[in-house]
Image (cartoon, rainbow, N blue to C red; front, top):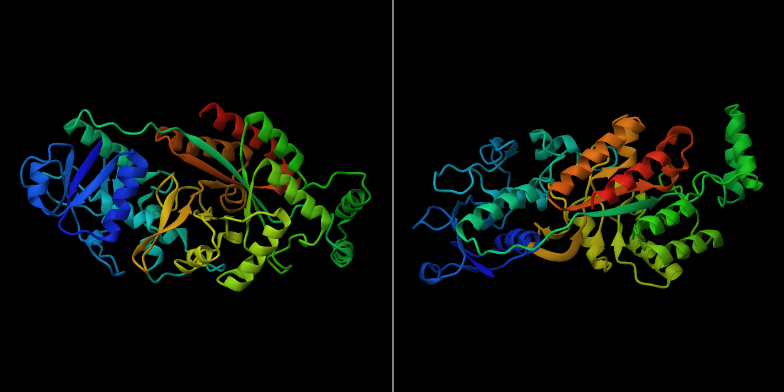
Length: 441
């Protein structure tokens, strides 16, 4: 069944957000018209998005955002935070005939397009957008998938007008992902790096570290970062299809990975590729350097002997639209960077895959964005949560996504699963996460 939408003007922004909300999330086809006569004579489900209601048709008061092409400073009255049910909303409208007291299409577009990240803003020391500057943080709604929640409410309201309207059945999905920044803690580092590490430990009188390093290198103890056997076991047990993002750039201050020419590392990557999807983890030093990134993608592709189409930026470094434009030029089709390092939650206000809309070029692209909800380092290093509180937070987030039958993407690292030192207890906690997530599917 198709719904007809009356608007005053057709725009790329309008079509993009209608496609996301109606087609992708609700699962119904739509047509857009600017002709009043076509709209009034249509006998099927219809909806009016405009300035004022004409008859008794389902009507949503529109603001100007979706009818524009330029990127501008959004006015305070547009970003005024209002109460909506038990949540919050932006882009308020004042029309008692409107189905919502805010423009849910403009609000959704503002969040999903990452409009605020195109405007002048202060960056952190890693050149990242600050979570404190996001409207969702200011609304205290970062942990709510607002776009999904608003869309569900829209569907219910339309169903009240058109009882025969059928929406697609949605199911909760759990997607575990791993960033492999360093496959081994001690092994396969090369003679110079290993020697330097021993010397540093000696200077620091860190004899426990010297002992552990020596035991690993002499084969008397398993390398703590090499947790892939457990991961593969869990993949089989829970029938998971995770995604691994491999850091394979040149060694640098913030890129302390294993050299890709290392045979053990190559064999590991090939093994992971047998059980999971593998994508590129563009190095810290490749940030906004397309030639360097291209080389890393090419090298990983050679090891796997397959095309690389998935990516997540190291340190979650993201600059819009340049970062995504580079990925598109390198034939990357799916990116998993959309999230914050310092806070859990939904950076784009949505717990579903969506297409990247390039505001600078005013068009939709074929790059699919997969937002993640939680990262291990966020809980441990930024929020200073212990295992118990971290598990509680993750269960809370999974429950939020379960309510709207969305997709929960988890970002983890192989070293976290060592269960040693600063990650003591986290291996067991991760198994509890899997139990909770799979049982709630």
